[in-house]
Length: 560
Ligand code: KIV
Ligand code: ZN
Image (cartoon, rainbow, N blue to C red; front, top):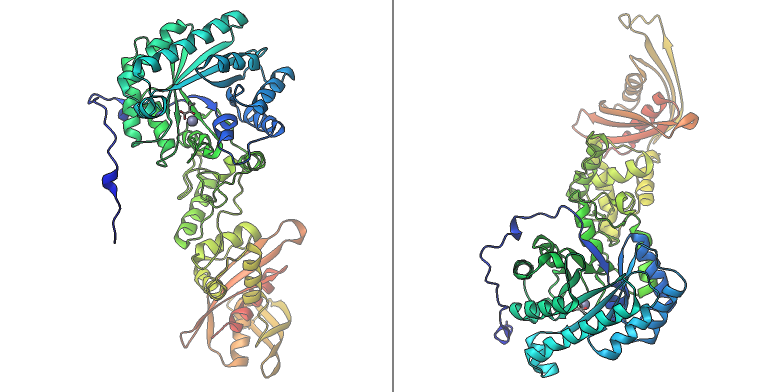
């Protein structure tokens, strides 16, 4: 092994906050959500959304329940300007929804942003400038003072333009962009300056958005930074602390969750984690994580398939099959032990009185996000007998008893091992039919008549069953009349004497399939021979006794 050049990288600094309290907190209510799908999400697309696609996405976000939606960077793009104007001019923004427009802290861009939002009832002007040491030194070649004064000048202009507009519905969000690369004390200093310039107070709050512009550390360090920031803020009541996490290390959701525990009030993110580079924090995951803890997420993802479709149409992005909650395979179990546990959990849940979800391997009820149970258990060579039984039961009402499941499991495995492919529920059903119901050799039941003899000398007070059968056998037709203490007993006696095979029925279960007048009975039987061989069979008929007799014939046909 050559080894990797890890010496090229330096560890991220920890925060000096030994008295941190966030690890002991839990999230008990949803934060204020802000969708950045139409901005960070859109600016990261190979083919940005058209105005029509943005309108469709905006409507989707409103229908999900977002009350704050960043609609783009209108001063930087003609399409985004036209889009915002359309939203305002065509009255497409519900009264309880606030649009948010991003702008750099530069005069002409701030002025243009105000033109774009003119007439909107509620709007957040989202002002940002980069504050990290890296950006100060390498990109802007400016000192701390100069960077701070950019933030102050930008804030002043937003305040003046708000006053001039006479619109009390305009609010300020300030982001020290590249916060994760900024010295904490310095980020605080810039934010204090912004608050002062804005005249922030408990009744005129400023949104301070502390972005994890690039995710540079483990989420606990980010949480420490948020707790430190909230504690050291001069007037905590005058600010709404917002977080905006990117996913460079793959932990954006954890970063946002721990930040909320550490004091953040507001969370920005995008559907399915779309956004720059590795994406923004996935707002679907974080919201459904809350749901699974019994907390109202205040966002409605009950029809995830429809949301997924619209997202794909608008962004042309795909969603990974393993994406939390949303991927096409996340409610599917192929492995036998998982299938078995899921099918038992589902049965127990149906019966449970409290209704609290408690199914192994499924942290959420797929139905709660618009997914059906059908795809939960899929059958391939990794699957087990429990999963196979689950599919037949769910799809066809065939409840193979436990003692018969290994028998059919072997038949399924034989096919999946040979083909290497997955079997659909229909293929599994066909195989069941072929193996048991359709097995016609060496014996085929042609006729069977059952009657009762009330005065049977052989039976002590019991009514004897008399059976008249005609069977096609390997060496020609067999016809026999036999009696017993029930149809099964009579048939076993008759077949044993005709074939010389010493066997008895050692397991038997039956139930009906289908409803109403066309309901049929299905019987499952295991026969045990004197020589130790066992064989399972199944039969279906509208008459329960005939179903059982057919099941014996089926078992005899499968005897090896
Ligand atoms: O990631 C980021 O820092 C941003 C800012 C503009 C908030 O998107
Ligand atoms: Zn961002």
